[in-house]
Length: 101
Image (tube, rainbow, N blue to C red; front, top):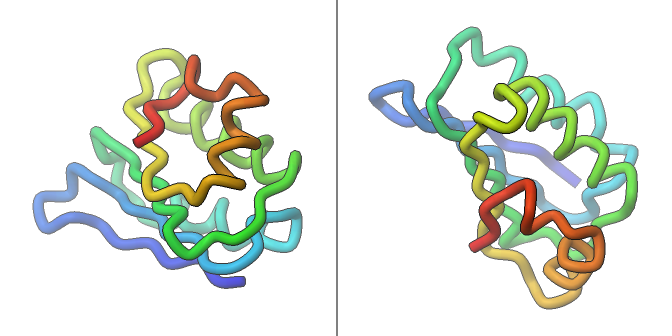
């Protein structure tokens, strides 16, 4: 499991990529990815292309990111989900809270 964060050149979009299992073991690294940037981007992108597993603690981490980013006003996109990850997000009704692409 690894978490990578990269800010766009105009500092408007922070992309957080999760590789491997997205579970409680990723908690601190995931939090650091959006808190340590020192900037407040307009949009957050959580790239789950290389994520093969997601659990309830990861859902909680996504909710913490949403709160950090401004709650209902937050622009957070979850992208490149495999079918299993997409199913967990769907069952949890996360389409109502996040833009899932």
